[in-house]
Image (cartoon, rainbow, N blue to C red):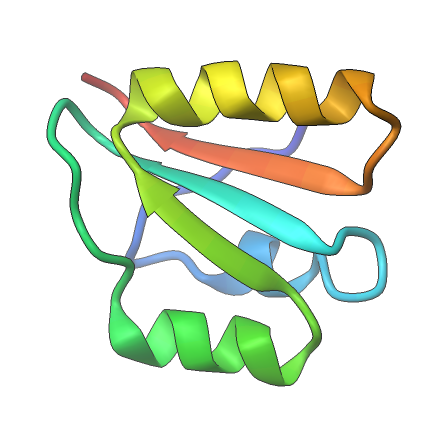
Length: 78
């Protein structure tokens, strides 16, 4: 677990490079798109971003982690 200040704080997300393959990005109560610049930066570092509602991101993270995959989850509160 790492502190994260939301979309204006990309540092902790960029630091995931080499440690995870997929980042589930929970963007609050509604389905939304990840900011293009952030997604491009993470993609260049080999981290695929999957943006979704926060509750869905948390569930997807738990299921995927249980499969032994290298994943992370960053959530904006609902």
